[in-house]
Structure formats: C-alpha cells, structure tokens
Length: 452
Figure (cartoon, helix red, strand yellow):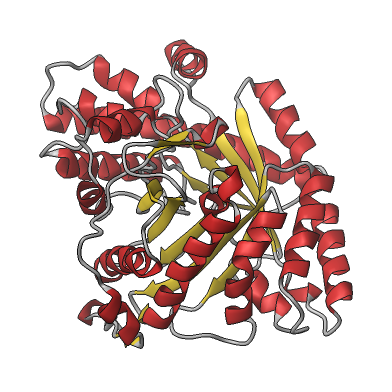
C-alpha cells in the first residue's frame, strides 16, 4: 500500500535534495557491424546506433516529464571498438568519427566504448586503438574512451600500463588549449565491468544482449539530508538510515529503467545505484562523510566512514532491485564534488588519502587534476598503484587523471557543467618510478584469483 508520507518524501528529495536519474544508458552491440571495409563498417555502426537509439533522448524526456523525475543524461555504450576495428585494420579514428556522427544524430550526451580490453595482452587492433586515443578524443566532442589493463584473474599488463601513461600525457597535450578536456573522457580500469552506465568508462560487454537499457541513479544530497535528521545517532543507526534511503533511490531507478525498456522495446539490464556527486551545493559525497562526524573530508577516519557508506548503499540497493549492477556504491571524483574540491583546495585531502579511500569506494582516482610537469612514467605508476588495489581486492578500480599542461599544484582547471573545476593536486615528483615501469611484462595474478 502506498504511504502518502513516502510520496511526499520522494517529491521533497527531487525538489530540495538534488535527487535525479543521472543517466539512462542504452548498450548496443556492434559485433555484427565488423567489416573488412572500414567505410562499410562505419556506415553499419552509424545506422545501427541510430536505429536502436534514435528515440532514446525523446523517450527519456517524456518519462521525466510524465513522472516528474529529472533524467540528466541520455547516453549510449557500445562494444569495445578495438574488437570491431580489428576486422578492417584501418585507422581507428574513422570509427571515432562515425560514433560522433551517431551522437550528433541521436542527440545523446556521450557515447562510451572507444575502448580496448588488454588485461592479459594485446589482441589485433588493441594497440592501434590505444595509440589513436589522443587524436580520437581531440577531434570528437561526445566520445569517451577506456582501457582495461588488469584484473584479479589475469594480473596487471604492465606493458599496457606503461603505454597508458604516455597516452594520458599525449591526450592532455593535444587538448591543452581546452583545459586538457580529452583526459576527462579517458579512464584506465582494473576489473572493468560490462554493464556500467556511467561515463567515461562505459562500454557494452560481449556478454550483454544485442541492446539493453541500464540506469544510473544518484542522490548524495538525499543521503546527507537523511543523516541531518539523526545528529546524535550511533553508527549503526546511521547505516540503517543510509540503507533505507538507498532503497528508495534504487526503487526510482528501477521504475525509470523498466519504463524506458518497455517504451523502447529493449531489455532492461541493471540499476547502478552509485552516489554520483556534482559541483552543485548539497550534492556531495564528501559532505555526507562530514555529516557522519568528520570535521572535513580527508582527515583521519575518512576511509572508515566511506567504507560504511559504500556498504550501506549496496545493502539498501539490493533489497530494492533484483538487478543491481554496474559499479554501485559511492563515487569520489574530485572536480565533480563540491566537498572534495573544498577539501583538496584547503590541503586536507591529499592524493595519498584519496588512494586509500579507493580501496573501499566504487571506483578509484577519478577526475583528479595533476601538475602539467607530471611525466608519463609517474602517471603509469599512479595507474599501477590503483590497479594493484583493484586486483588484490577483487574490485573495480580506475584512474582518470588530467595533467594540467602549463599549470602547477594549487592552480585550477575549469571544465564547467557536471565536470566542475579541478584543483590541481600535488604529486610526488622528487623520485622517479621509471626503472620499475620500464621493466614492463605482467604482474602475476594474486592468490585470490585461484577460486575454481
């Protein structure tokens, strides 16, 4: 039975506490678009995306209007392009341009999947696609790229890690005139998942249906507001409040996903119940942690508070939907979170503390601006450290760092919109990891991988 108080509470969440559906993402398989002729393959890709997702934006807007639920982004994820491009052997940038044409025609915010999966080595087309990433992200506006360089089962491909340090650096340099925006659309993963609806890391896994609808919900402001009502409760009480709040948020995502699935005649996939912050006031994961009792995000106790938050969000979500997936938990992107930005600017939140926090959150080092002088091997080492956390803990970790070309620690990069502004964080540049990175090869899978 519907309780009038629950209805009023949900209305208040939307109007006062920044509750929204962050994204409705359609995953589309492009495996049947592969062709030895690159032009034919690109035409097939464009036609299939437009045929499948031509009404995605229109449908999302209709659902938002009818139900009064804000749907911020409508997005598409596709099969890792390295798999499709391998059939032709042509310049992968041709495929990036085809995806951009499809993004323009469908009106979506982003298409993710300019990607390669190289956690155990390079297959045909992988290295060519990776080397093309800087150019591809500089000549397109709505295309996102990701590379999976490690997994718990395979270990870490350090050849790929070394290469990705160079690629991140090149991407920053080639888009330096636009505040290095290319790197904001590039993620390096360990244990990447196939059903992630969030950018920039979304791609459509080979185990997914031909097409599918995934939903990514948000709601840091809702959780913070709920905790404000319990100023003196113990941590067990706070965990219960977070679980109940996550349940309600996930229910809304399930409703939107099911409705979009029905209207578009596409199977419903998963709800990703990640708390995805924005630069808006009252929409911050850092502020949730401070509401739990920390004077500021980044102080001692931050990792423990984040672990409790992440766990409670997952427990509440799985009770609300049988199909929770993606990343699901709490994101800690610096430039996209007003509280994280403030803590980084004040010096209370440092890169080493963020790395520790990634062991218990949903993803990893996300949207972090670093000094422009940071070398490719230091970037590779940052990627390796983060991948090791994911590999050993059997969880997804990622690195999305932006070398701010021409700028130093303490300055700021301005992206605007959901990407916010990035305070440039200090990186240890006094000692070099170059010899370690140059050894390359593969870090073997940990003992945890032997589960069969």
